[in-house]
Length: 368
Image (cartoon, rainbow, N blue to C red; front, side, top):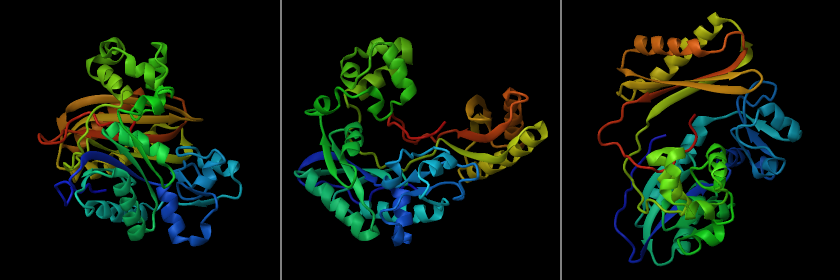
């Protein structure tokens, strides 16, 4: 979606705060708004809404999550966990329209600087003596305009605000600052931090760092051998909840575009794989062409049956030539393991960044 900049500058005679606004069960909530009779029922959204097809869960209502259903789970397994669930197809246009209405509501809040993170979340920077009161007014404004509930994390840094939202759900408000960070987060596992997934958490554990408090106490330089001179100190900073404290409303610039296809029947022949890659490349290049920036890197994602995923990435000489990109993709495809049935192919094209694009270490969601 587009990433608007704020329509307001200036403060409210108070202390600078960062708010993280996160819509509750966003996609499921949009579907329930369209079908009020689904309120209170387990709702699962994914693929074309058919659990007999290969697809994954995009989102699940809280009622479905209670049965252990989560994003990324194969739809057929989710359907097995909740036999009476209502399973709906993904409707991106409806979610985009709802998201844009939410973001427009945030932009007109008094003294707000808005940094959009995705369909269902954004940072809001403001100055106020009463951040909880401001957060509740934001919630009320979003609810009145869109009929959607949101949770709000309050922090003195972006990281603390983002993490605070997890304690605010559903539809609540929670504050995390330097004063209570270790009290709240200290004994929690490092994977609970924004920007630290299971893999990084496992690598930290091998170094004897298992909790947020342990990560907060580490000498940043001790992480350099494992994570490098940039990421090592950054993970230590995350452990302390530190980092940027000013919401940046610079228009967001995509680093790349990706597409993927799950096949209803496994691909077993090289000709099938090549045809699928040609189609996938054309779709990705269609997205890239609208950016007007050359491709500088490619990542091929291959999911073999039953469910083993591998990625192959290459930097390539900067090019805007579609035939050259396709040739590079097909070269990359030579790394696909012969004789292994393929259930999914994905392709990501990384683009050159404009000189004025925002740089920094704000963690990003998703991606391969």
